[in-house]
Image (cartoon, rainbow, N blue to C red):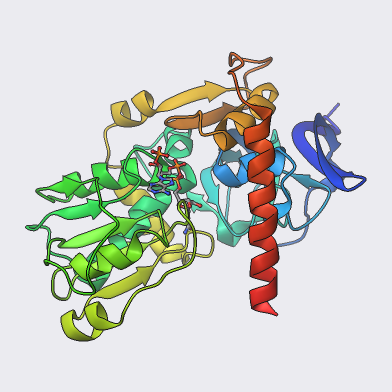
Length: 342
Ligand SMILES: NC(=O)c1ccc[n+]([C@@H]2O[C@H](COP(=O)([O-])OP(=O)(O)OC[C@H]3O[C@@H](n4cnc5c(N)ncnc54)[C@H](OP(=O)(O)O)[C@@H]3O)[C@@H](O)[C@H]2O)c1
């Protein structure tokens, strides 16, 4: 008899807070309709947004109850909407794991139009080692290529040891960038020495003014993150005197064409690079991984292997106060964003 339910990381409201539970979820929970395809999830990623959702931080969760997980790689489970049973696919973004059920589950159902076929040469586990972070790095590099950068000059990457930054550094070197500089000082003049032939920034507010003031004529800064905060205080001079371009990169609603290009670039990277970067865990480890991500204790990428049973990860010493402090920061950021958008 066919199974009636599947295992998933489920969060729901418990009074004023969010509660996470690993449980069997009936298949009826999954979206149906002509444009939806059911996928057996092979691997999913664990991202900062997932950490927030699993630890009960409201910031990213838009609908409840919800299966978490903003990205996955899997195998199509039915022949429908342009896909055949057995096709390998990648899913990232489109607010999965925020507004509708995500990839921390044995099965998911998503719109066929959101799926990218797994490119030749890329394994599902490598695809999720790259995940949303590496995909975003590839989009940043495409932004530099589309908008103008000079790879004979040094290229700046901030947060170079993080998920986005580390993949960006690797891909830039593949593209022939001669010098990739991961460090940055935050004090600068409105127009400083023209140092960077291109830049990728994940830090946001604290670093963007300095980078803009140091960009070479006509070159591009691709910005995708807020790791250091959102507010920017700068002048227009780099833009109107040096033709500097500030290019915003969003992975969630990136076009299908950009997705395919980015993933085919990522598929050219030797698999050893990704193997060294990842830690493989089971669904049972999600609470621990989420807590460690929020406490800044994770280096590299964590990939959930849906075939693994039982916890795989040793517990780390995490100060619960660190996670509580982060919850408070997220709540006040959310309040200020809500106030701004009114
Ligand atoms: N636009 C999009 O579609 C998109 C997609 C994915 C990610 N993002 C965003 O991109 C950012 C980075 O994501 P990630 O996955 O790379 O995160 P990550 O793996 O946690 O890495 C963050 C990096 O930023 C550095 N950092 C953090 N705070 C900093 C500060 N105040 N000043 C300087 N460096 C700082 C960290 O350095 P330490 O290790 O020294 O702390 C680390 O190298 C996040 O804001 C994320 O939300 C955006």
